[in-house]
Image 1 (cartoon, helix red, strand yellow):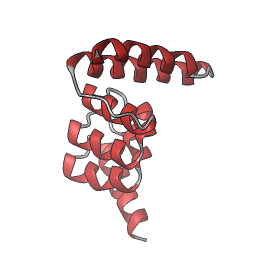
Image 2 (tube, rainbow, N blue to C red):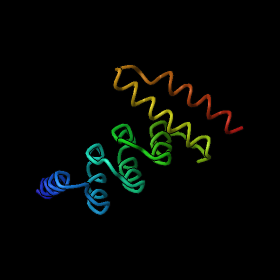
Image 3 (cartoon, rainbow, N blue to C red):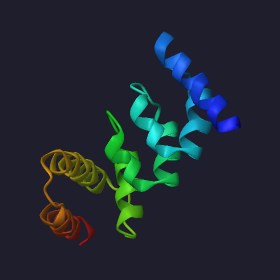
Length: 123
């Protein structure tokens, strides 16, 4: 019952205005897919969603570089240093994956290119 009440609270607030971070945080921690309903999420909310479900980054309207990096690291069980170049590469990969998903294409080539690019940053 609590989840249903929380859902209606969020829905009601969405109809009026964007819910606050205080409302968004517990929502995405319990149901990361709710992140798609929010248009203006803070990086803290994005990271909470990604920690709960890395794939939720693909539902975000404007994921931060750190949220993209964290999601990619968790999705592929990679241990990457959070350098500027790798953060940018992770963000490009997430946006490419979002595009592939819309087109119904696999992410295989995008992921391969990401790890090839990341190798150059690690050495």
